[in-house]
Length: 215
Length: 298
Image (cartoon, rainbow over all chains, first blue to last red):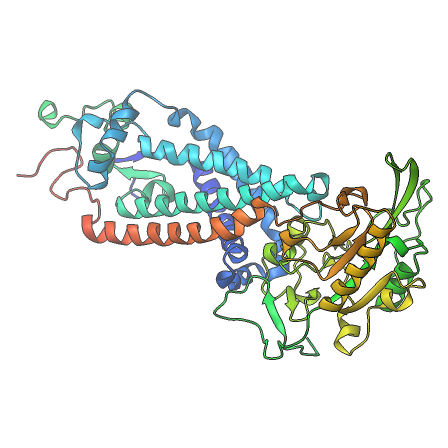
């Protein structure tokens, strides 16, 4: 691959974590939906049928948590809230219309991506805790029935919210052309970086992003 | 199922557009009446249940109470519960004995919670039955049940409970526990007849000074197809914590009746939204007329 004129964005270990997690998430989400919406019950055939899917679902769920935990420590530093985030939120409408807002001066991740980051990490933690509470035959017997009922409700609610977030995540990666490059090959184009993450661009290149000064 | 009942009025995880076979739905509602006031605690019903259903629970240890085994299990579908109650009004010690097991609710919490299509069914005669070959062992029925009845079997990870001897009832026989009860404390028949008989018993008990006597047929779960005659129906919790007002928990109700439709709308709206957005706004591309160095081509 010609790495000339490209910028490294996502290291190999983080990318592999992400994609291994994606495979697990796809199977876990499909089987979870199969029990939430009876009309989608056929989805649990992806994991070998209803009974086997019921057995595998929690183990794969734990795998997702482990991958995300690794990604958390690698990425948390870039996802801490900062002053400019408020400006991004007040301009979110323009961003979604595809209008370029110069004053945002986004860093490595924009405020919307940070919401995704913390949303995923929060929801997966809720899913792990509630999932352990309802995990038969291993852990559920340790909890009282009223607690298990709350666990079932929380697990379903957190699962739905996480899937909604992930639908948004997949869509935005598809909508903003050039984004997926950073998750497949590590490298993004300089043009992409300058347009969507100008402050990050300056940080890694030491260049400016204002055209007049450059020319 | 090898024998089709064709009278299934409710089927787990199945929507109204695709109901189970129910052409033979004119069956009368049945009920088992357990008169705790004439029960002598002999446990013949427990033995008969195990014998008819071919169940052998592990031999336990005596822990100083009459309850044996100590709890319901996948191999014990009915269990005598013994409670000692010091009645302050009469100054007497009362030995309260209740035959515990599935209540066969008209609105079954287990069936509501079950995620696997057809793993729990309700027959037109009121019997709630687990279809074991479809059971996936998730244990949601345990959470759904207001009476703490279903149990998972460690050997096969499937849930079990009293069937009200659906196999015997289907061929016109009474349940095994009813057949064997030596004092007539357990009766079986149409629900109407059982309530009628129970009312007579309650009247008699009240005449003998049990002012709180009554029938336990809790309305919170739509009534049950196992009903008790209790000498203290005003305090059902005396009988090994029989719930005063059992109903499907609001967490289960919220999960199945509220979250499910809201989530369906949210998924459709989100997926639809992405389509409208992509077609309306168009892909976010980096301008082609811009070079890698940020200069605009002439």
